[in-house]
Length: 430
Image (cartoon, rainbow, N blue to C red; front, side):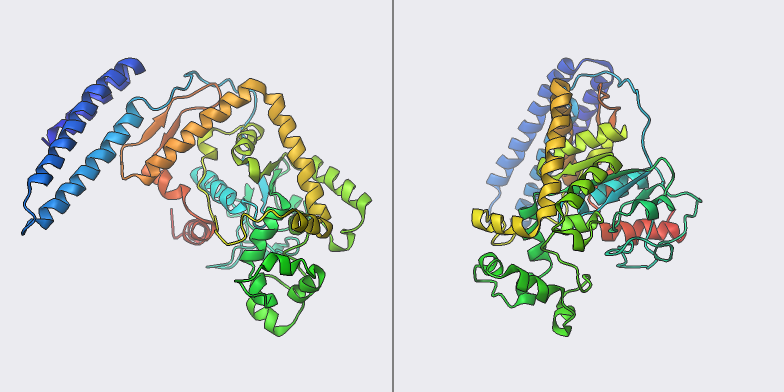
């Protein structure tokens, strides 16, 4: 009984190497039949076992059944993985490996940083790392980066800067190579506000009961509450960890990360010029609400492969007012965060212009990536040790997913910085 799966996998391997997908799928039907019958046989045996004194045998049989079902699922994936057009991409661009990612708060930037860490780690590229050891993840934020904040480049040249910092082109140009490109991500401002409001403990700091209508109360006197949060009061500082005096986490927070000065919040001319400046300096601005579309456009901008943009969602929180979209609250927030709304409106528009320019080819590329993303997620969540591969297409070279890849793709900033990148820098990890 135990020999059938191995024989089955061997037959599929031979077929997969030398025959068409359709013949391989016919072979899979044969193997699936054997695996299904074996699973059913084990289930029948389990049903015949007497309950008295046989609990352990039943548990063992259930474990065996689960293993067979998982093997069956992965055999299906490997034998007939995806209906992708198989060809080799024609490259008219060069891969960009020198870049700065401006990590805007509560905008999906943790997911992107994890992706960028993995990208650089796989290529042994040099990161701009904070000087501290464990739990030091900032590069000067909330002020522009200076030389005393980061570790010197061991190779002599940096490739990637992607930790929390403030965008400042003159300061960053002194650190990064001349061909460095800049990337960031924006989120619909009211959604970003709610996430920041929860994450930075605004109800607790402001004394608003969690079981009350916290958003309605905040917008009853938002400027007063913002002044309390940004004050230097000792009782506020004790709870407001990681945020210095004078920094608002509810008003134009994304604009602050991009270097927009607070004293210009109400200056519409300055705001328009600033948006033009960001558009000129950044190779691409992603939009969280259209995350996978943004990833494919990022891939095109950077001349990367599908494997480089596979992602693992990080810091996905659930809270009572997450779905609150009351228009009166949104309108109130727009008055407070004019710059964030202007940035989002502009770059969301440019995103869709680029998507429309891509036409049908972009739609097909996006669908191909989504299929690879789904199957990779299932594979990494399984216990399978056999590498998973997807053929090259006109949009990307072959994608090969291993258990090592899976162990890295789910790492958050803390684990990657403290347990991989800093240890490698210190010579503790090869």
